[in-house]
Image (cartoon, rainbow, N blue to C red):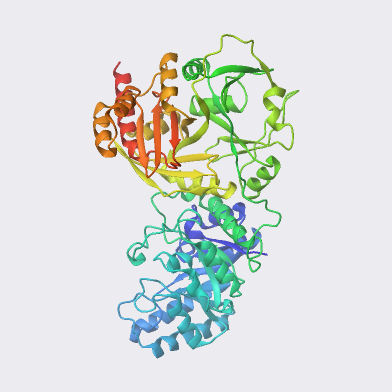
Length: 628
């Protein structure tokens, strides 16, 4: 059985509460952070007993620092602390004492003296029935790498002293996991998995700033796990970040950490026999092939705002639900569901958040397997009463309380519009504006929630993430993280906001929490679409004339083309041979808006250079609307 562990330093609450959160998330073990125990009113034996009741193994006690290479009274004090930590580990029932290489300024570099100290450490651990694992700290006084630590462990040559490895320490400076191939798995007692941005930096200067969950950063953790497993490592895989980062939510760490750890090990297990599957029968990550629908929860006034905007976008109301106040509006392959029911999930979402996107449907190959994976990774289930003639569409709750439904073609799910809805009488149909499909959906959340949403999507769906982009709002900073399925069928933008004065922050404040802030529709001809929208009375966001003066110079565009862009308030970006065009609606409700985009020549971004321009225009429009 794969042993999955998490450090209590990363989980909120008092120590008993930390244990309960870890067990509830699905972990089988914990690393006890010594200060958590120091602040606990009971005894170490109490915690050991409680962990056992919850089905948790205490894999390690940490940290123990400033031990080896000292002399005189400092050495006596170090050994007195060692005795106290060994007793604490025994009382807890911990398997391993985690020992960080010393950072003490007076520690000697005399190898024989250090080996002698570590030998006595191993002897005391063995006599107590535990093991000690030496973790090389990159900022240590002398022993900075795991290979340096391995040299010391090999010299001591005791079954009670081994290595602890931390992927952040091993990889964040740009090193490759391949250099660890010479390490015997029998020498490795404990492994901590932590991610970080893939940057070339000295991690000794940044140790307090990073420590992301697997998948959230850019380190090659799959290679790290594969090499250690092939070496014969059979111990726990643990999550122990260096510290909390500014964009981390401690409240969700246990749940998110479990998802991230299982996903990482499962991905490696599919191609590496040395790594057993962390969860038997876990379905593979889901390849979503498109957005089937987006559902809005509205009251009468909000419905009028939304349907007026949809009409101006040349959508047509095509169907009414047979028993509910629910309408289907359609153009191309875009299905917009307008739900004005006074009871049920949509009504509850509206009461909590105001008018909002409450649900989205994704097309997948197998809806039941999709839900099975999500539930096995801890996603909350979702169900609601199903009326006569209605389909029971598989669904889960997303982060933030939204719902995601799954539509496949293995059953009648893809026929939901024919089964549950009746066509409306054909009136004069508006001329379509060329909107083909949903290009991307942007969800806005607080900085602290952003990594949680990222882990939710990456662990459930087959998606790749782009680098985080800092977007300058006139009133602050927004972080944007783009995700997409392999062929770009489903694209998501996660936007983290802090200051309430920003446009995104105002959306969070007025909408009472995270949610979808804008939906982008794709067209094959932005200029034809723009002309049609003009005829339909579409209210687009005005863009400052200065933008187009700068655009002409930046991209060396022909005057005629610049004038055409300016006339349609169309934003433009170019990346190599790729081009990107954007039109925005004015915002309504609490800052929700639509976007129309065209991609040419393989452009794969989102017009990040235009984001400050758009945000400035939106803030100006919002101010003018409030003053009116």
